[in-house]
Image (tube, rainbow over all chains, first blue to last red):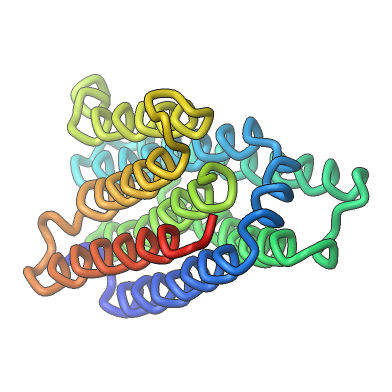
Length: 181
Length: 91
């Protein structure tokens, strides 16, 4: 099993919570399809797609970092983690632009049901991204020396699992909020 | 470093990015007459991507059997529920 047992309990718990979010969103969408479809046209798909790309790339760098640590490739791990962090920061910056674009257009969490779910779910996800960047920062510092004990590799695997969780939740949020018609 | 980059996870990353581009195009109506069918395909592709992330990036492919089963059941159950909810909506 990669990482600590505790992290997998957390990952699964979080997946269950987000499953409820996804189900809630589609249930209420079903009650007001026209409203949700009209509101969705105000979303900027380019921002959503760019963030998906950043999240996938970030996850890839983290996976590369874990593999590099197992093969004892020295500084490759902290470099991969820094690249992952850069993508994570990029995600946050894009989200800030996206939210401010909405606020400038007078769209808030109170605008309608679609935007209530949009701000709530992407906001909770953004909180995960912020926590994840903190974790990546910690792991980068820990791996800086380029030598890895078994404990460090386990910590890396645990942190990586959390970051991949953040990635997979975004994949579904992007499809449900931005793409389906 | 080169061997690392040429590994399976890099191929997975390419597939994930490619699948994202495909979903985006389908969201714009490419390949489907009916946008509802395109949306169902988009949900299915999203969960295929999720499966890749779970099995390959999270390394559940090599994890104990029960973890893989939990992961696979979650993917199928949530994906099927979402498609059901989407299709039951009155358009």
